[in-house]
Image 1 (cartoon, rainbow, N blue to C red):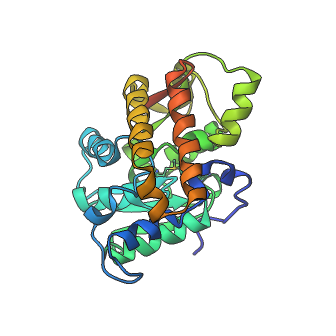
Image 2 (cartoon, helix red, strand yellow):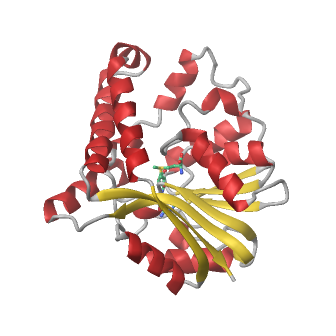
Image 3 (tube, rainbow, N blue to C red):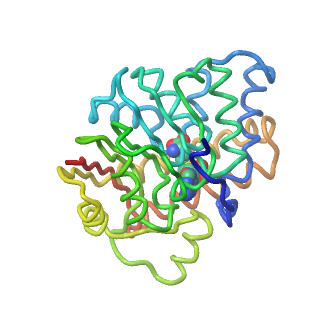
Length: 281
Ligand SMILES: C[S@@+](CC[C@H](N)C(=O)[O-])C[C@H]1O[C@@H](n2cnc3c(N)ncnc32)[C@H](O)[C@@H]1O
């Protein structure tokens, strides 16, 4: 049964983090791994986590939600599958990883197979808003830096609520606003960050409550993410000759643009980070 429909990816490639998924193959070649050799999750974690603070962020979710080998977890916006593979390996949980971009989905599924994790991690390609998964089937719905891409928050939260078992958790690390954006900032963020749904911290919580979640807990991640994105930019630019050798000048220029953009906005005071969870009754 087809559980999810592949929809148009629209303008998502305007976000330069997504334009060159071949980066992953370049990093593997640099490690001396050929196209088919077996891999471990440890081989990949330095470059398959497309959010802030890498696997530390996933460990926090495992801990806060009590995810274990009996858990069935759904991840929205799985990228190339880094969080899903790490989650499955660390906790023993079964993970369903939904990703919109076909190129990212394919790389993710292939890496999962090469890690021998395809029995634990199931990859689906398509728009989460069009997904048709079984109701009451997940202990947790999790997501790192993907929810703000998705334009219809009420529909997204209602779907999450329906897929969760009673007492299941919705958990995300995402972007939220400390103050309203100008039209120029709105345009920049929708192009360079593919931002389609940015709301204030209080509206973020209200949307969860309206969808039926309770026991809401949230944390402002802005200071920590601002520091992370500044360090990431500095480290990347320090090692630029290495990156040009492993990738190519166009890819390096795309990454510098993207890393610089994230650093500038998180330091700017309006765009912030949020870690938030809510529980189904
Ligand atoms: C910043 S990446 C993070 C990937 C992954 N969560 C990680 O931390 O490594 C966000 C991902 O969400 C995906 N995404 C955006 N909109 C989506 C949608 N409607 N349905 C499923 N995935 C979506 C993007 O294609 C992108 O790969």
